[in-house]
Image 1: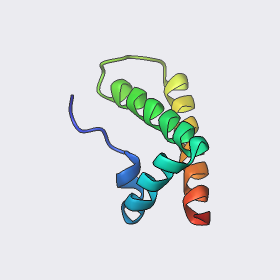
Image 2: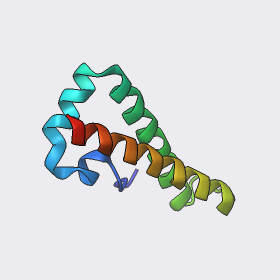
Image 3: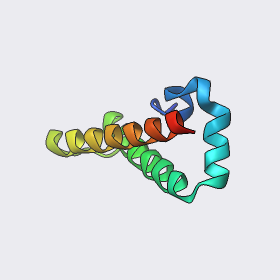
Image 4: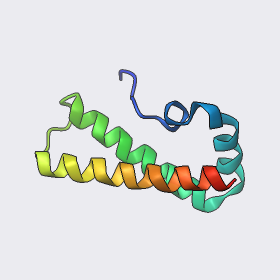
Length: 79
């Protein structure tokens, strides 16, 4: 599969070490990052035509990803 944009390391390039630490130490962060990863992959499959869907559902996925990214950004800011 081709490169998937919007991976957390790309979204927060200055926080890569902190991302890794939180994935090792914080179960809540692990859950959030896992959900983000799953939704991000699903969006990528939709964008590349592998998994066609309605525009409404794609928009819902994008909103979910943004909400998760905001939650992750807040955790990174507090850490």
